[in-house]
Length: 129
Image (tube, rainbow, N blue to C red; front, side, top):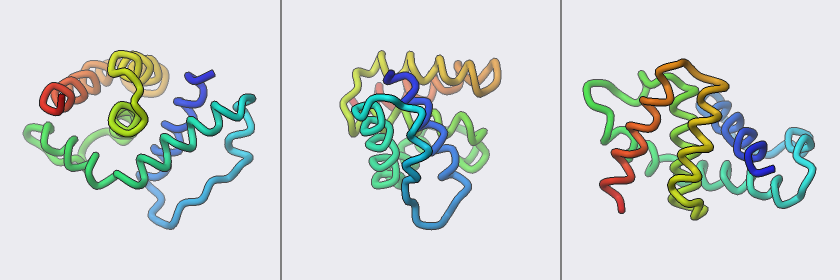
């Protein structure tokens, strides 16, 4: 299921916010995904995030008013990265990516996080249409 693949990609992006060494995929990490297309989808999100991390960081930073990107709750930041990567580099429809990421946010983050994530994403996407 794409939802599971997306959630796995989010988890890897979250991990990458803390790990600074070169990144390689552990195939075992993707073993919970039964379909090869889901494994490929999750890997694609993470690789495109890695390849475009600086650009994505700049986009997010430009919409944070009053504080730096380093102060954003890391789970929320990983979710924003995941959604933006899907929208900008994979071509997932905006509403699909946002709805899916907000569902994941409700599982992993705080009560207020969904509004914050939605606000940042909406602000970025409004300016970059």
